[in-house]
Each structure stands twice: as structure tokens, then as C-alpha cells.
Image (cartoon, rainbow, N blue to C red; front, top):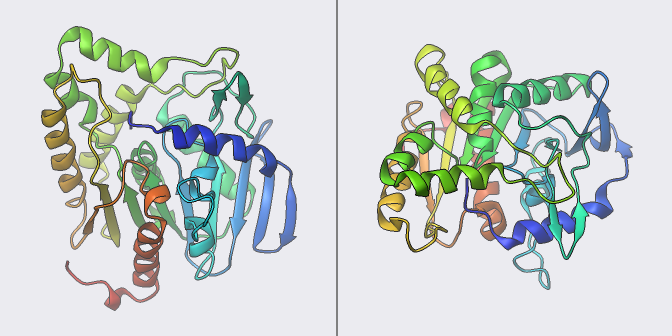
Length: 309
């Protein structure tokens, strides 16, 4: 989750032009939705069931699913556009997503909240948003990076509302425990600090008590394990974006083992290595992510289409 590219910062700038509320059809919407005294930004496109809900990674805006920053001169079909051709797809922006570029602040389009936050608060926000906007379920959750743990916690809290899942280079519940074991105390302190560093002039920048959230996820895996459902796990073939003084090879082995373990959450999960991607698979290989979502949606509609890998 710590491996974020400069593509994210550029993506944030493009999000500015998308901030206006626009209702186009019963199935297409973009704008702010009140969840009880504050509002969250939501976009929905397409039609059909189940509804695909996209959960971005740490501090990422919704536009990581919509804008082609890798090939801007020859843009490809991005995840939202692709998924909208076969079912309803919704994405939202958590409070605190944003960045600074050349001293220009690009904040989240959702109302700010006090930071840091708990993952359970973020899960409750998404649940409140889907119900306030009357987004019809059931849902297939797609979680990138930190969005993976959030999707799993959502499924643990509201199991009847989740019928499928796609994990996109998602964080594992043992990420911090195993990473800390590989680092010196000073190295680990620097890693922890990197997750909590705010942006100058943006005190609402997303900060999350990730350790507490991952502990909650470990308990949930035992107490309320993921129900059998179509699950696709996509893992990048990247190198760890770490300073050279860190044990990069060991961290890579840890990450790969954790990705393999995510594919054991339910029987018959499908695990695909994105061989041409960094951490943001949805930007590097959007068609691969779209196809994984298509397969899960198809399996929800026709369980016989899903077989052991």
C-alpha cells in the first residue's frame, strides 16, 4: 500500500474537472450524496445486477479507476468504462483523498472529516453511502491496495450485501506484522511515519490507523470468514518501491506469499499475476482488471461458469 507512483498525483489534478454534480439517467449519476450531515462524492454508470463497487487505495481519488494517465495520447478503455458495458458500476471518493502538485492543492470531493480515522469508520461510510443513494445490490466489491482490507471488512460487517470480490494488489492482514519483523526499529518507524505524514495546507489528508484495522481484519478472518463466493485476486509483478537500505528482496517475497494467501480466502479463488504492472494494476493493465470483474459478475449470475483454477 505504500508503493504509490507519481501517476496518482497527476490523476488527482484531473479529478478537479469532474467535481460537479450531474444526474443523467436512472443508472448514471455523479455528485454529492448526503449521508447524515455530510456528503460523499459518488459516481455510478451502466445498468444491471450485481452492482460493482470500486474501493480505491490509501489516499487515492476515485479517478484512479477512470483516467488513463499511462497512455494519455492514446487512451484505453479504463475500468469504469469497461465494466459499465456489462453491469452497473459505482465508485466514490473517501474524505481526505488528495495531493499537492506545484503548490496546488487538489482535495477530495467529499466533505472533510477529522483525521486519523479507523477502517471501521470508512466501512460504515460506504455502507451509509450505498443506502442513502439507493444503489441497488447485491454488490461485487473491488478493492485496490488498502481498498482490499476495506472490502473484506465490509463483507464481514454486511455479508448479505456482498456476492463477489476482486482484490487488486491488495494489502494482507499480516502486512504490518511481517514487514516490521523484516526491518530495524528505525526503519519501521520511518515506514509508519510515511503513512501518517500530512500534506502542507491540507490537514484533512487521509490518515488511517492501519495497524488497528489490520488487527480487526485478522479477527474477522477467524470470527466471520469470507463466505464462499467468486473471488479474483490480481497481483502485480512490480519491484518494491523502497529505499535501497531496506531488504527489498525479503519484502518482495513477503508480498508474494501474502498475495498467494489471499487466494485461499475462499475455495476456487482465481489468482492472476499482472506481469506488466506496478502496484496500480488498474492504470497499467485496465483490461485485465475489467476482465477479472467480468468473470466474477458472470459467476454471480451463473454460478456454473465459475470453476476451480
